[in-house]
Image (tube, rainbow, N blue to C red; front, side, top):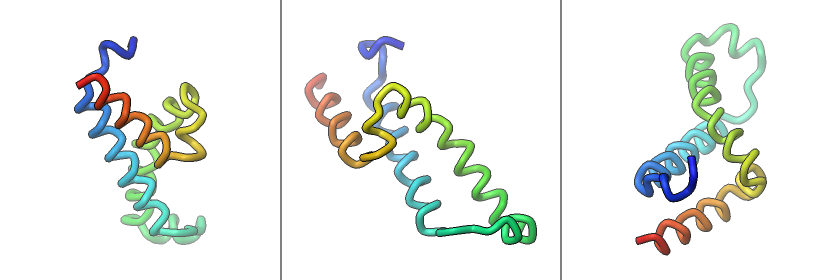
Length: 85
């Protein structure tokens, strides 16, 4: 999708959702295979968060900064969106 076809609000919501998922996984900390095997709720939560983060991988392929410095990337996207307003 060319940048001119992007919906600013969709991009902003998506970035917020990604940040929330990354924060959730960070708060969870290290999880062992045994924990995932024994705790169905934990396993489902981690699986769901990771499946939603597939989009982050797509973004990271297009914008390498996204993977290593997500906050700076979000700030750059915000600046770009504001310039379009």
